[in-house]
Amino acid sequence: MKFYCSATSAVNDASNDSVEKSHCSSNHPSMATLTDMSTSSSSSDDETQHVHFQSVEIREYDMILGDHPSSHNGPPVTLDWEYDETILLPLDQYEFHHAPRRTKQQMLLDGSYRAHILINCDDYTDDEMIKAENDCKKIQKQRDSTIRMLPFSKMEEVTQSAGRKLKRLQSKHK
Image 1 (cartoon, one colour):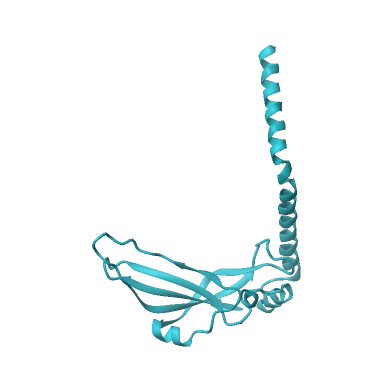
Image 2 (cartoon, helix red, strand yellow):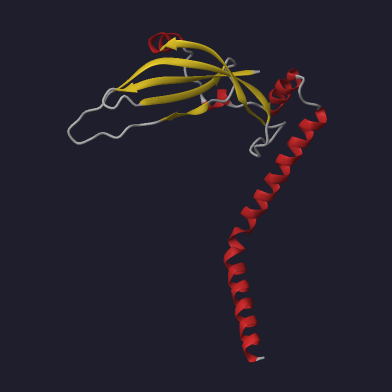
């Protein structure tokens, strides 16, 4: 399964600095989208700066077995670091032809669909996917335990502090 990422290049008129804006999505309507990242430039007091976006570079990313503990059913997935540059489009052409923004619900992948994607990649065995899923469940249990114990953390700190003070007092009296 491939994800597509577009990177918009821009030129800052005042300083000729290059600015990039990235946006990732997939060719499937239920795929997750990475958040937009952009770099802004600071403006000087007397001078107005303008940024003009010129083109959009679209990259293709593979989806691989991940390790994020927020997936509750099925194996976790993530984007691979490697990518294929597919096309460079003028910004106007990209804006005219890109798909409409998806809702949060459309971006969610259920566990069976994530497993289906990984099985179709032929890169992962069932054992690897089960291990990744079990690792996520273990981390989720640890996080739940931490949340349950938070109300007692202050009491634990006080108890440990009192224990240290008692040890210091005992060592001074010896």
